[in-house]
Length: 283
Ligand code: PEP
Ligand code: MN
Image (cartoon, rainbow, N blue to C red):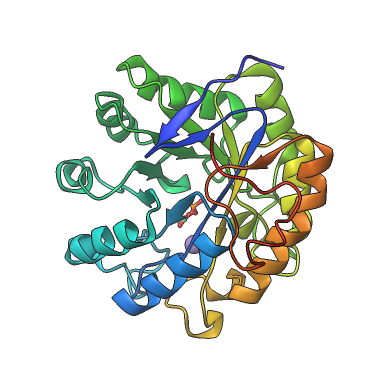
């Protein structure tokens, strides 16, 4: 196992061998109310980082493209109230200057893994970057994309396996846990698994999340919505709040067996008198 490289996302340390990160939030931020409701729910389930799309790169230009920069102020308000760091996708280097005051970690999406001018610009910063794997990217190409960021001096890099395109159609993508095992053995970047895009199916997300723990990932990122059928993007794969609670609960025995605890705040939904094994606060 390569030496751990820890990335500090607004005080939350990703990549510590004894910790596991739950990153959760909506695919797209849709309104102040929706985002506030989700932020409260994910925090109560032990999430250490809040996610939420502001700029959405959608396959069809006719679908919801995100609230864009008009959401910045509201996002700052919600993440501050929740007390959680925030990750969101950057789609264009021209957004860096304004987004840098809103996010604690930039996300580079699958569609932009090969956008070397974006990666180079992010490399000039000292802000964490979560680099998602391209739909058909080789692990070697993915690691070289990370090198574009690192070359500028920014070593605050987290990799995110989000599934690759294969001939399979029962799942949206094929979640490549081989790649996670490989990266945990041969690279030093923290690795997050995204079972939401990796499967596209809420019924499979808990299984693949537990698999992510078992394979040694540093965390998972999942999409959550209070009413998935009404979501403006990716509702078909969103967990509702009770799904998220079951998921977080089902991870605990595995985390305990592996000597790990969640990064970040204690889960609160079970009350102070009955802490679940494996939950804990950040040290
Ligand atoms: C996302 O995480 O919101 C997203 C668009 O994912 P990907 O870039 O992996 O498709
Ligand atoms: Mn999505």
